[in-house]
Image (cartoon, rainbow, N blue to C red; front, side, top):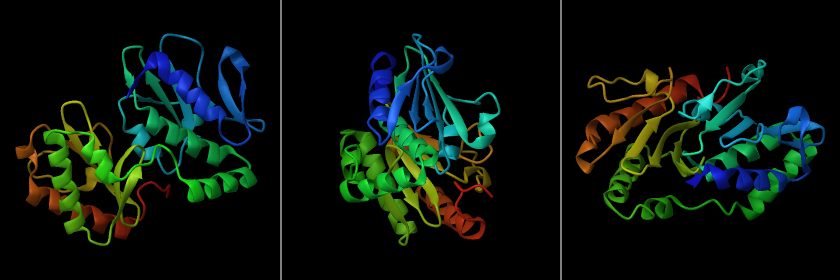
Length: 248
């Protein structure tokens, strides 16, 4: 996490490092463009941070976060999401950089977008790391809890793939179905179709209608039987309803 006062500089620098990107200042705002099209809005200069990006695959997850706001001027209907951070907030720079990459790929001319995909496939990203490395950085009970969750998901979903996406471990089968996130005092274990899962104990939380999560504040909070059931149910839902990140 990075505080707001340095996050904007890092995010703008990252945006401008992408192929064909350049900085412009329409409407007294800072934006990053590729060609003539904006792919990131950074808003006006202030103590707070505003980031506006166009998303597709990450849209549902990004809109589930507390920092997400409705994008004005009808842009929310076109897949844009606004992220707002106050000057005291910590900014998940790695995740936002990935969303800037996605926005660039969606907005850029197809020739540039294809080149970005090729470069990513050949060289990878400096932000990428293995799930084992992600877990190891916790260094306390949270790491042990995430190791248990990772093993549990792999056992319950042997055909699923796993990787670091959006700066966190993500598990996929017919699209993403579960994720883990390291927080300062707890571990988040979430599901893309959480709102459709059977939850007799009322453990799942979340303001959105679809994505839900459970906060693990101690190892004893891991309900293996219930969590395993959710993983299996989430996979079945994806098999029937398709990738939850795709618009239908």
